[in-house]
Length: 272
Ligand SMILES: Nc1ncnc2c1ncn2[C@@H]1O[C@H](COP(=O)(O)OP(=O)(O)OP(=O)(O)O)[C@@H](O)[C@H]1O
Image (cartoon, rainbow, N blue to C red; front, top):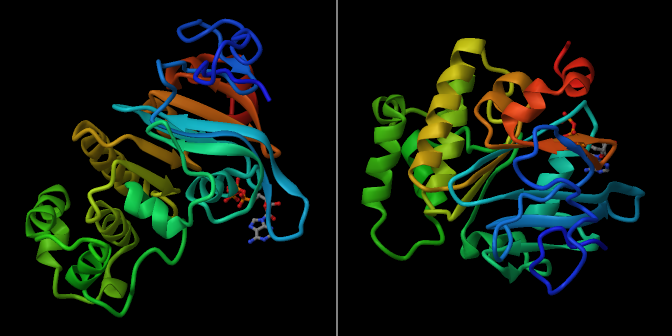
């Protein structure tokens, strides 16, 4: 396996990173955004599938660094959600590693990854609909033994509508508000990194813009964000780094700007 991140000794960096960060042209394949010591969170060379089934991910690499929003886009069935699940430890990895802040966490359970600082908002069933908004947030704090009232106040500052609706069952909220509950719940653990699987699924364009603004705000508080998005163009606009996955493999990697400017990416994935 290539080691484009140069954090496991003296290997040929040219294998995965022919031009390096900052080149004008997005590169095919698993490109490096090399930072000393490697990215903050990386699923590196992941090959994985469900149960005894075929490989869905093929040597797929996704990563996010401190201060960044990294976005994973690609056609339906490309393996975006599977990539997120693999990073979160919900699949058996057949090859590859997951590292968080330099530590190899490949063998940890999802629960243990949460304790290590990973917040994950899955695509579906990401809230408890019969519980109130506030109870959902409290559930998010389940691993904490300290006083979490400050964090709850921060979540309410970020999503004021949730404060207004804190005593309502979460199932009564609109789609965009439910997504806020889901993100808020993940923030209650005070994660070191936040993973979001299609946070804007099923919401209107206006609500999508609002959610993206909130996500940028979260990122500005210092929490790196790795997210999957169907709304590729809009997501790449706010992305420091983007991954286009095709059939479970890295097809294009670059900054959001680079990918938006790439004619092939535009033609194939952004509707021209
Ligand atoms: N629980 C599962 N068991 C078996 N196969 C699955 C499971 N979930 C997904 N797959 C398969 O994995 C492949 C990738 O699916 P995945 O949901 O990761 O793609 P995606 O890029 O997130 O797609 P979408 O944009 O439609 O959500 C598909 O072929 C899908 O059928």
